[in-house]
Amino acid sequence: MNLARWMVVGSVISWLAVTAIAGPATRLEVLLGMLGPLLVTVVSWVMADRTYRTAPERLTPFMVTSFAFKLVFFGGYMALALAWLGLAPVPFVASFTAYYITLHMTEAAGLRRLFAGPAAPVAIR
Image 1 (cartoon, rainbow, N blue to C red):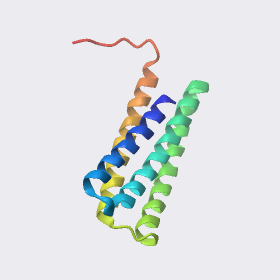
Image 2 (cartoon, rainbow, N blue to C red):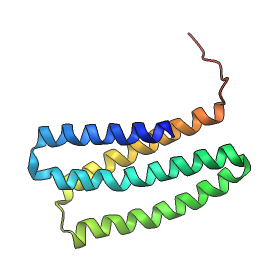
Image 3 (tube, helix red, strand yellow):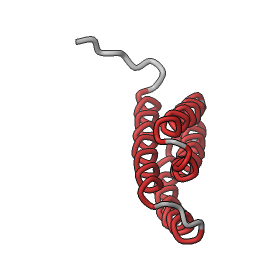
C-alpha cells in the first residue's frame, strides 16, 4: 500500500514540475496524460498486493485479467482524450507514455520486492 502512495506523490510532484517548466498551456494535457496510468497502476498494485498476501496462487490469473482490462481501458482512454476532448496530441501522448512506462516499471519493482519476501538478503558488492 505504501508504494501506491509513493506513486501518487511522485506523479503529482512531477506534474507540478513539468507544468512549471512547460507553462500553463500544457497543464491539462500533462495532467490527463498522468491520471490514466496513475489510476490504473495504483488500483492494479493495491489489488495485486492484496491478492498475493491472501492467495498467492491467484496472482497470475489476476495479472492476466488485469492486462486484458488495461488493453481495453487505455485504448478507450486515448481515443476519448484525443478525439472527444480534443487535447493537443504531442504533450498528451508524451506525458501518457512517460507516466505509463515509469509507473508500470515501479509496479514491476514492487512485485519483485513482494516476491522476494520480507527477509530477502541484500547483496553488497
